[in-house]
Image: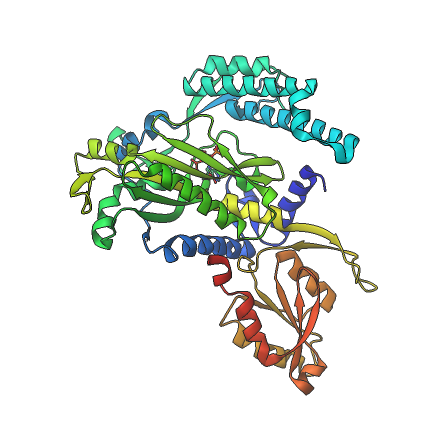
Length: 515
Ligand code: ATP
C-alpha cells in the first residue's frame, strides 16, 4: 500500500477501533491534542510497562521517579529553556501554513536521498548479478551530482543552525527551491524564533513572579532530585533515574497525528557517570536502546541511527533512533551525552551543591549524564504503523470478507491478549466459555464475545491485534477441549481446556522480551 494511504487508513482505524480520538471532538477538536480510547490506553500502558520493566526492573542500578509537572520557574532558566527552547519557524503567505524551517530543509534532504536510492535500484535491475554498488556510487555522474548537493545542503544547514543564523536558513530554503507542499509556491516569510513552552500563573494573583511553565521535558525533574534519589537509594555511580510523564510543547507544526503533539508523554532515563567514561556509556546506551526496539520483532529496516547535525552547545554527542513511519524516517528516540551541563547549572542557580562523593576516587565531582529519551505516543504510532496490515484471507468462507485488517502486534503489547468465544450463544456454550474466561481474566486482559458469527468476531479481534482466540463448541462440553486460533497465521489447534492457561502463560512470558 502507498505510504500516504497507509497513514490515512491507520488514522481512521485508530478511531474506528477505539485507539485514538481527536481531543474534544464534539467541538471540532483541539490542534495536536488527542485522547486514547479503550484499546489505545491498553496499548500505551503495555508499551510503558515494557519500557519500565526493561529499564528499572532489569537494571539493578536504575530506579524510578515521578516528579511533578510544575517546577520552580528558575529550573527552566537554569536548563536554558527560557532563553533557548525555540524553533525557527517560517510561514507561507499563500497557504497561510506555518512550518519549522529546519524541517523543510531536512525533508528536502530526504527527497534527495530517495532520488539517489531510486537511481541505484534502477541500475541494480539493469545490471543484475554483475552490479557493484560501491563502484556505481563512485563513478556514476548523476549519483556524484546528487551526493555533492546533499553534502553542500547538509553543511549549510548545520552551519546555519549552529550559528542561529536565520537569514542563512531562509537563503538555503530559497536556494534549494523548496516549495510549500500545500500551495506549491515559494512565497515565504522570514524565519522567526518561537518559544515552545506553555506558561501559566500559580495562585490567584497574576504577576511576573508567579509565572510557571508546563514542563517541556521530564528530565529536569530528575536532575533536581538527583541527590535526593542518590542518598535515599544509596546507589553508586554509574546509576540511572527513570521517569515516565507528561510533557507539553506549543509545537508550531502539528499535523502528523500523535507523532507531534502539544501534550504528550515521555519516557526518559538519565544515567549519571564518572567524567571521562561518558563516551563509553553513550555507545553502550545506543546499543541497548536499539536492542530494546528490535526485540519487538519488527523488521530491522524500520530502524536506523542518525547523528545530530546540530549539537546543543553543551552536548558531547547526540543521535536519534529513527523509525520508518508511513511519512518517512523520523526521530523516535534521542540518546544524548549531556556532560555536566544540567547539574552544574542547577548548582549555580540554586546555590546548592549537586556533587557526588566517589568512594573509589576519594573525591567529589558533578557527574556527567547520558540520557535516553523516547516519546511514548510516538512509540504507539511506530508500533501501530509497523503492525498494521491488510491482507487476503485464502480460507475465507462464503459470506465472509476475503480480506482482513490485522494488527500484528507483539503479544505483550496487544491491548487484549485472549478472546474467549462460544461458537453459538446457546446449548450451554456461553456458560462453559464464561468459566474459562473467569479464570483467564485473572491472568491477562481478555475479551468475552458471543454476538455475531465466529468469522466476524475473529475479524474484530484481528483488527485490534488480539494474538489468541479460544473457541468453545459442542465438543468442549463432551471432551473438555477448545480451539486455539493464532492471529497471524490463522492456524487453529485443538487443545485441552486445562492446557489453555499454560499456553497463554508461556506465550506471554515477559522473559522472552526482557532477557
Ligand atoms: P523533534 O525534533 O521531532 O521535535 P526533539 O528532538 O525536540 O523532537 P526531544 O526533545 O529529544 O525531541 O524529545 C525526546 C523524545 O520525545 C523525542 O524523540 C520524541 O519521541 C518525543 N517528542 C518530542 N516532542 C514530541 C511531541 N511534540 N509529540 C510527541 N512526542 C514528542
